[in-house]
Length: 358
Image (cartoon, rainbow, N blue to C red; front, side, top):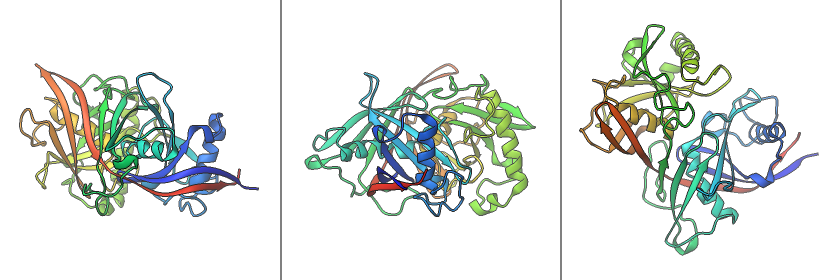
């Protein structure tokens, strides 16, 4: 016997995943997770191919958003993010996803739980996993979500209507502090690193310290087993230092190698998320990397290139660049982050019922 659950499939930013209304899923956490794993992979045992489910065999397409009217007065909608760990029959819920966030308001409007205005609709979205609120603005002429437009984001073919995301209160969202180790630079296994959390816990390191130039292809890095093993060992130690505990079964912190920019941006990146190399860079990972660039003594010193007092930071990645708008102030060595803004796009791909066997 198969169970049918209403869903919508959205591309959000450079990710893709399933969107569910909270009311359509079990309240019991373990049972809910079984349903979600089955929806993505077709089995709760785990399948790297995800051949019997709606996942795409990639971490970027094994994502889930659970949406509901907000339970707090400061927000309009609650967004809970679930990452299915490919082939493991497990999920991770410690982090959030800024790409999938771009689809939350369109999904809420399409689902009828949030009323559209015209020509735009805005909502304050609570990121349940990590805390913090994002103010999202969607194009809704004639009270309908507009998906077509001229906005191009790297990592996505073609153009779409812009979705403006202004992140509020993201500093230390997961780790409790912007610099959870209280150091601008830590040395782990002989490698200097900046451990930072402005919406996403990230460990930033110089590519040159690993004997790399930082511009290697994704396949080159994926095939470098000794590199991946060292980065994972550093990640496990950094997780403890960042107050995250044992992260061996978690997808945070993300690991980032940096090099000087080559495309007119601020800094060039290669992200490990955490065990495979990202084809681009995650939204909140980009926000954390951009934030590191304005810290006077972070690992980005003498690598990042930007104009003093600039608020726009172009973060280069394998597919192009990602621009972050940071509103901040400085007082001697202290940096105060007021908000972090990005532009994303989204598209509704399908809607209906996903059938699962539990």
